[in-house]
Length: 251
Image (cartoon, rainbow, N blue to C red; front, side):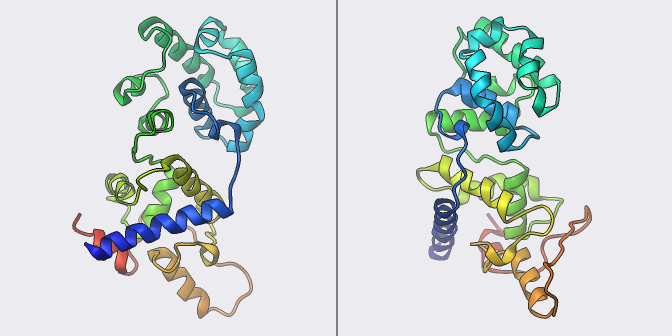
């Protein structure tokens, strides 16, 4: 138990410290308005944060409330978000606005079930709305978080989806979840990349299964170029055992 708590605190502290030193600031990260959070998270799906940030001010100037979005035409919404691609998002936003105004009195619901009933809203987006607006501690798992935890804990592809949420809950801080989550997202963006992860600069590399494997390989390879990591669908991340997998193996 003591070892588990020590690992949890160490993981939290390293992520929080790295996030403080390497902040990325976007307007949608500063709002607690559930309307803006919901719209922003929908726009962020399969789109970069910088791209959404570029249209953020214009979007909410034109559609400052859920009622304004409900009254807009799909073509108007599509024009504002055209640079993001994925045309169906404009239609989804319009449908969501109509449902909220009709069935929820214009108030964004804070129930995961109600939110996930909206088109284009899955567990991650719903969780972000609830967690960022209410402050509730909810594991928020997208592909970025899944990548970090799968590599750190050495999860095989066949089981990682079922375990990442539970592992995230194990290492969530008692407060400050939103900034902690953003630090994880930024770490995935800047360091724990899908290809060519920068393990040497990662704050978690001394306990990470994949990080330790690649760093050991680098120490025996006399080359000046970065190590290339290209995951395969059949490849298992469980290349070695370490403290983290031992602690969480039976949880």
